[in-house]
Length: 143
Image (cartoon, rainbow, N blue to C red):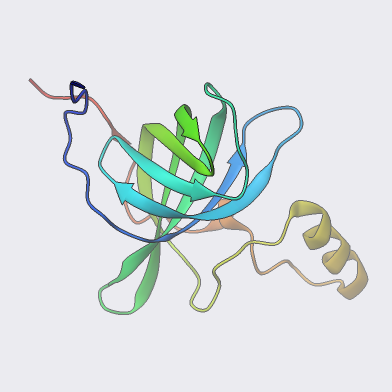
C-alpha cells in the first residue's frame, strides 16, 4: 500500500509546456502537462531527464487576461521523479506572465541573433522583456 505524499490537489490539465534545463549545456524541449498543482506538475516530455535536474518551465495557460491577452505560467523547479517519458517536477516558485498574441514559442537565442543580424531588426520573441501579470508567488504554506 502506498502513502500519498502530496499535500496539494492535482488537476488533470493537458497544456503545452516548453522547458529548458538550467545547466552548463541546456537541453530544450516541449511536452504536455498530464496534471498540475500549485506545487508541481507531471509532464509528458520529449526528453528523459535525471532526477535532480533543474528546469525552467513555461506553460501556455488556457485562459486570457481580461479576455484578450494570452498568459503563460513561468516556473523553475526540480525533477523529483521520472519514468518512461514522464517527469514529476516540484516547483520552486511561479509567476504568470503575459504573452504576445499569436506567439507561443520563443526562437532559440542563436536563431534569434542570426535573424536580427541579417535583418537589422529586433527579435519579436524576447521573453525577458515581457510585462509580468503577477509578482513571484512563493510556494510556502502560511500555516
